[in-house]
Length: 344
Image (cartoon, rainbow, N blue to C red; front, side, top):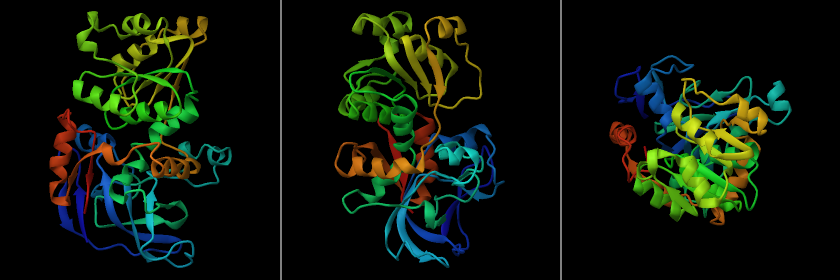
């Protein structure tokens, strides 16, 4: 099979012929329909974040496809079934899994990190983890449910527990942030989208944002003051979807008394949070990682009935030979790009 191989940081991916894997007991071989291009992969390529499996390896953790081969003992699936693969695989038996928090499994494995991923024609997956994709959910665009939509869903529904009527601010309207906007709007919140790019703010309006703020267009970039002027108080929940210490603090400063700031973006750098406010105003700062397996069927159904849009979010598609071009779009923060997918 053909695959894009990651040999190490600061190097382009190389498309090569490699052996097609064979499914073992309890596994399925999936013919990849599409795999989303994610900032997480760029952390490995550009920033030297180490993968658990040492290179050379295959990246890509946002995959959909069809069942191409069944391993011994697999009875749930049949050939050509349409499947979505969750980005993270859980063990089901560790203390975190046993209390229903499989997304922070003690033994988690991630495609394109712990095991070979889906920037390839085929990928191996545990049969127990694959999810059925109905015919009326597009298989190619539906691949982004695996992470770009499921991660915001978990942040909005499970971590922040957003309710109808809540005011929500979303900082960063890229591939993840734009879906915090649309999931929060889908559950009934009034959303304020915050981004420096007018094009991203237009996308946010299309996906349900009530208001938008461009920090470059307001006095001293004070989003907190702009929000309080707009709605009379701070927001109930703020989501930081960039992974920048400054915007984490900015997002925290927009929440009202008793409010919650949810950090969805990744950064290894520290952020200075005013602990006195946290205590005195009973505010919360929480993190959010990935999504629980139990939530994927709900998300897929929301996509099936149109409550969550997927087709509109895929703004570019590339073959394996164009994978480095797709990452160039991502690293250059192209204003017209929300999510690109690789179609092997």
